[in-house]
Image (tube, rainbow, N blue to C red; front, top):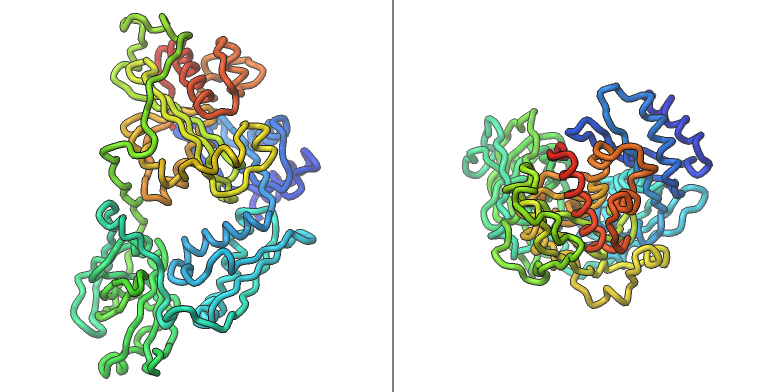
Length: 514
């Protein structure tokens, strides 16, 4: 048992009755020498409770850690959230069978005695795959990591097939073929089993959805299943795992393959070449050549290249921003701190349906302003349809309700515009970690990878103006007489931009980037 589980966690749970099921989700180490601790719990934790947790953690952290910040997200195993997460997880880790499951096929029930039950209803051809690969056990383990609850799932056989399910398939977004470059890896010592020789270069399984035509994939065989076509001819479905994801392919028998198919066993490392094509709009990978290989033991996946910065704005365009209070602040170029000259910053704030993107919460508004050479030059703002319910609690907090967003663009329609707006800039936010993680998570799903440096104005404010009662945005802005409408994205972003300029004006230098 770790020191955390034996010593630290019991002390944290003694702080407040609401923390009985609190669990550490992740720890993020910062370049500045601080650490963010993200917890999940089935009940809310006040700012005061979070500060007490920070005090407990500081007793166990090395002296070199300058800052310790705690965030406790209330994540309840709401059936709708559980269904959404199951569906997302299948698409992420079981792409080859995810197409056979719709949200209508997944049911989840309210937790009872600390356990949540769920049911997946699947067609006959997929049912065997779910059972033989213990998919529900893997789903339950994943859900446990994201909700404060135990999970148990069952698979029900619908006993029907609506399409040719001889081959398990996954969707391909063909519009991405020219914009996302597939990553490749190199295996060692390929030795031919059948077909033609393979040079050892393979596409990441995680990038299979972006590939088409003749492709090579490599990895360890994790499953082999013999099937029959509708005409009774045998074929095999093998599944490879290259640590980035899993890829399934089908092998149709020839006399040569029948003699050698037994060489393919679970645990065998191979590289294969075949044709990745589409059938009824869905992809099918037909393997033609197979070789033994040695998968690189020290392989570390390279981060996927982002889609390029769009040439034009399509849905949301930057607009001029008026700020009478700013008049005269930087009237003369000489008054702008040298550290701001030649630099571009985008100050961002978002509103969301809740605190956890892993729990299915979505972005409802994004607001940003741009600072160039020390001056606020324009703004970027839009409401976003989250395609899920907005609670009364969130509406009271942000003023955003379902009626306001029902006709607004979804995140996938606006992210390319924000990606363009933020290109080449340093991202700034008040508690930036929260906003940036949300944006990165959903942007990555659309193929846009943010690598911008970041600045969080909370630790910057603590350094420049110590001894404030707290460092919430409204408190720090009040110190500098900055007025704004709290809990609306653009207003918060604009206020944060002014705050940042005030802090730099005092410090005369930039803080360390995140």
